[in-house]
Amino acid sequence: MLETSARLLRLLSLLQAHREWSGAALASRLGVTPRTVRRDVDRLRELGYPVHASPGTGGGYQLGAGAELPPLLLDDDEAVAVAVGLRTAAGQGIEGIGETSVRALAKLEQVLPHRLRRRVSTLNAFTVPMLRGPHPSAVDPAVLTELAAACRDAERLRFDYRTHDGVPARRTAEPHRLVCTEHRWYLVAWDLDRDDWRTFRVDRITPRPPHGPRCTPRASPAEDLAAYVSRGVSTRAYAAHAVVRLHVPLQEAAGRVSPSAGTLEAEGPDSCVLRTGAASLDVMVIHVMLLGLPFEVLEPVELIGAISTARDRLTDALDRSGSAGCPPGRSGSGAA
Image 1 (spheres, rainbow, N blue to C red):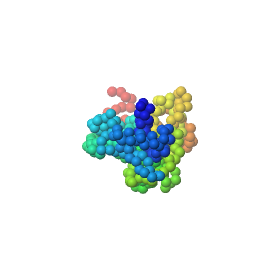
Image 2 (cartoon, one colour):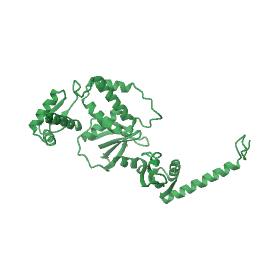
Image 3 (cartoon, helix red, strand yellow):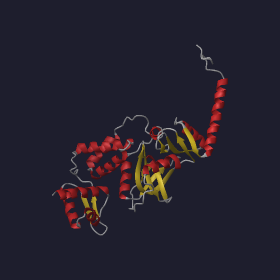
Image 4 (cartoon, rainbow, N blue to C red):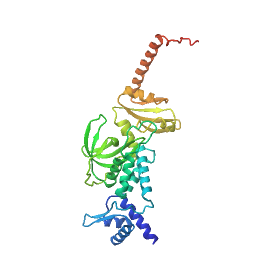
């Protein structure tokens, strides 16, 4: 009995992980016969889980939404509270929680009855969170779960996209993963029109369903997708690139440099290397100076010239300001 119960939980987990499974694939993953899979599916249905089956060679099993909430040890009010909490966590970009919340929300909404979905939508539509500080890129949790489902099901995605310059565009892509950094969400996807990997800001995406057809998942563009996205939004997207050594420990630098401002690499106990980008070398000077950390330029050498020019301008401004006299009511000697 214990073995059967464990297998049922494993079967349920597999049905939640992908949109559709063939009977042969489930039998292979569970190490049982297709006949056993059919019996286990019937047991899940008896427990209230809405498992749909389609006949034929292209058919399979799919977990759908039912008239009643399956026995997840949650009553209706608890299910609504969990869904609202997951949506809130997903939308705030909380470190270590956002991406997990989206995955969990996608699973929950897959089996959430219509009446409860409506309650969740109403609560989110008429609730205004009071956040600390500005929220740079509010993302609709419904868009996040839609994109997460497309990544999970390996479905081709069509969407309208607003570029950095505000120009509208229509994109077709094969979604791979969602990546959250600070308060921003990014979709890593294979852009079919450009035949290359691209990173899209989710707050600029408007999905255009229906999605599909299914596509074969591609190998990830990087082992560390968070670092890949960070390099893309902080370095590759800009015309000017720079590498500087910060003379502080990596942990201290990480408190000043966000993932969207550059990538950090440990070099030793008292220094680290920053790779970053900017619209121009003049802007790069300001960007690095505002970090408020001691640094030296590793590359490009032209950045040293830009810093020298900025120093001369600042020195000239100080000289001119000094020769213009002190503000009214103040003396140059500082005496009362």
